[in-house]
Length: 212
Image (cartoon, rainbow, N blue to C red):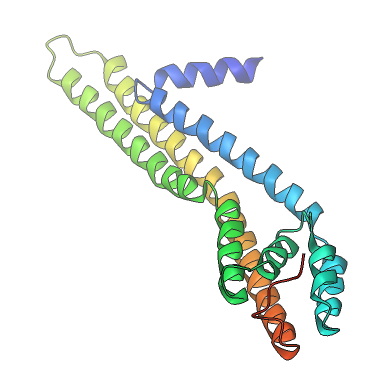
């Protein structure tokens, strides 16, 4: 309760710029939570044994069984392979590229927003610094100079700066983590696509659509 009162008091002392900083902070928290849940669920959906089973089917030249084993997959890598194996209107390589792009687009969702937040937070804090210092200087020129007005402006500047930096720091760490997970998924997708093309090419399946 005391911490909440202190936080509210600091918020009001930070000046009007604290309102947009608060909005940015709320957006940052929502994005971080959404991406954390998404990556946690994706990690639970990964099925390396199912992918190996599909590889085995392709190595044996059984395209229909590979399609069946990869159908309705929740693993993004296996899902990409399934879309690649069903390529009646394009090449297998093209279908794999399109499917991989769709998976990466979903995995990279909101990363641009997080990058914007990392940049915007300190800029808003800097704006609060400028407005706070301007308030202090305007008080110095007043005929009724009060120490509280000068220190209040400086305090407003420091609080806004600290709030903006905190938002950037809190967002930067998970953003880099999500970027690393995205790079790892991209590597897995590329490796799986290459394996499928090699295995299918050996059996002459890369240009032949599966027989439904």
